[in-house]
Length: 305
Image 1 (cartoon, rainbow, N blue to C red):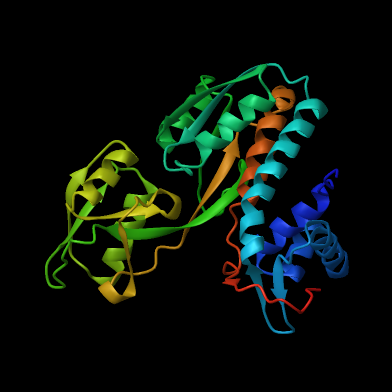
Image 2 (cartoon, one colour):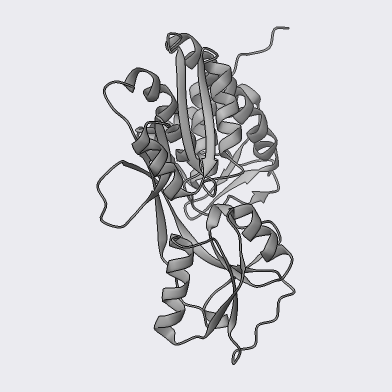
């Protein structure tokens, strides 16, 4: 007996519902109606002979079969999208020198660039990681073609692509005496993380002392893990195992940092567009979603909408 083929659109609807936390949010992301998404999910369940969601008028939960399907569905969509891109835009060829702020999605970006290289094997990306000031200088001197770096509030240059909060972070074992100067680990000045943190401490009258300065984010992360002091880092660069500090420790909110792409010009558009589009698409999957759907036991009777 031949096996049925899975519908890619139905799989995409399923993954989007699971990640967005609901049918309405998934419909908005995919530009479809809620009823169209429901039809896709029903078609997928009929094909598999299993329910993937437990849906009531007030809640939506993913079933155990749905959890199992989610991993397969993501792999299938990734392969489908890679294949389509590879044949849709095979002409991009050349070299781009890309500068990236080292704290920008440090764990995620290498995987994005690896996937990009598979789809565009003739477009070579020379990636240089560094501090924002150095990268901007490289762009202005012509040593870099594109730069992903911080954009200051109110700045219109570049194209904004990502926002994330800044966090106070420390090792779980670090004890902070409220009446003692806050031990501060930081990048050298000028640095938005350093400036934002020290300005916030000054506004609340909290004494501080710099105990560790490193020219790299990795050095600051290492100092945090070692328990030397408190650091200000972007959410995506908080090291594993570190604890986030806040109002309970008497530390103020630090706001957000915005990342932007600089250097897009008519001259480099043919090479830049595939890379920029790929990065933007990968970032969309990381946008904060509603709380993850909880798994529930699969009932034997009801049928999901």
